Amino acid sequence: MVWLIGALCALAVAGAAYRKRSLTLSGAAAAFVMGTIYFGAGNLLWFGILLVFFVSSSLLSKFKQANKAELEKSYAKTGTRDAGQVFANGGAGMLLCLFHAIWPHSGWIYAFIGVMAAVTADTWATEWGGLSRRPPRSVLTGKIVPPGTSGGVTLMGSSAAAAGGLLIALFGWLFALLSGTDVFWGGLWLAGLTGGLAGAFSDSFLGATVQVMYRCPVCGKDVEVLEHCGQPTRRIRGWRWMNNDAVNFISSCIGGLAAWLLALVV
Ligand SMILES: [Zn+2]
Image (tube, rainbow, N blue to C red; front, side):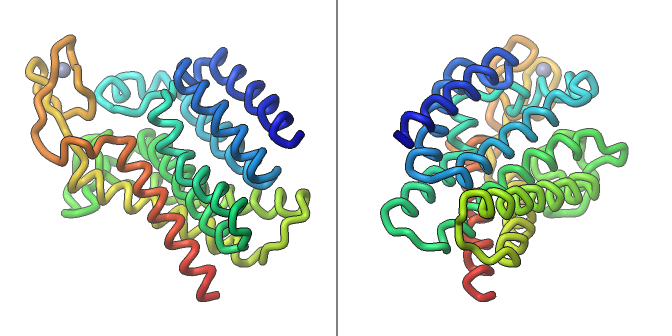
């Protein structure tokens, strides 16, 4: 019964997101599977947090989209998410949800808050950071880099990352109350903030070091996409498999691990 309710809720959300062009068809299918598992194997806490991440990120992507239209052409992430992006963002949380169903322990929940704080923080940092008037600086060298460069950070982006992490904590606390899940509220806030900042920083760090980057042979720009100006791009650095989705997934795991370790200590 829980699985059936989960499937119906997931179908409604994925369908609405597809119609609003927040998800591609493959993205909607992935979101349906994921939402069903979050609700079926988890409860309102797990499903609700996934929804908060998804709705807040989609709203931010639509917000002032015109400002970023040019930037998005050279950037792997766009407002419309495909299956790869859906699993990159929600995959680690889905595994934690399944682990929690098999071996129930509150540690999984803190790790989950950290994971979702990380992906929310990263999306928020990207969306808000992209609107920053000051140019971003490389997380590695501190030098000014062009807007949209992987590994570029701004104060606005970092503040947005912290806010995104805290939003997940706030809803985590709310959904834990509503679903009668026994967790320590202070641990949730710490997990949200730590997961958010650790995740966003890891994302920038991986972006500046091992993430694959390409160069457009026509306009000469460094981009994250395989095609630019109608021409295939050339790989100039990074590991071939380390695309934006891989970076997102790994950063979310780092955010989850940081939150879990901190919750363990506290
Ligand atoms: Zn180009």
